[in-house]
Structures are given as structure tokens and as C-alpha cells.
Image 1: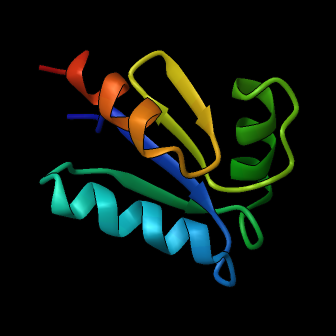
Image 2 (image 1 turned 180 degrees about the vertical axis):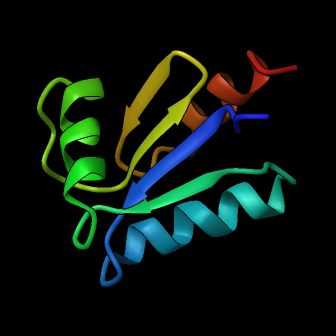
Length: 81
């Protein structure tokens, strides 16, 4: 089954690590993509985010969040319930 939450990150991004920890604390399963190493993931991230080049980009169902915005993430997670 495909995970409904995807997070696009880089290894040196502090906010990316915070976002992953936040999702883990919420008990959310997610798939993580390192856009520094995976060019296809980078292109996908840009496509779904309207061209964003900064990370993290978090896709929750059909909602895309650029940056680590707790309130936006929590609202989007409610749509999965």
C-alpha cells in the first residue's frame, strides 16, 4: 500500500529533521525522499509544489506544504482520518 504522506528533504536540513520527528511523534507513517541524491524525487518535489526548491516539502494526500509548518501539517493530517 502506498503511504499517503511523503516528505522531500536533504541530509543537512534541520527543519527536515524536525518535520520527520514531528510526524513520528504523531504516529504517522511516511516515505522520505532525499532530493540532494535523487534527481527524480527533486523533479517530483518541484512539480507538486509549484516549483519550490526549498525543503522540506511535505505531501499529505493531495495537500502540499512547503516548510515545516506544524499547524498546516496537523490540519492536513486530519484529512487522512
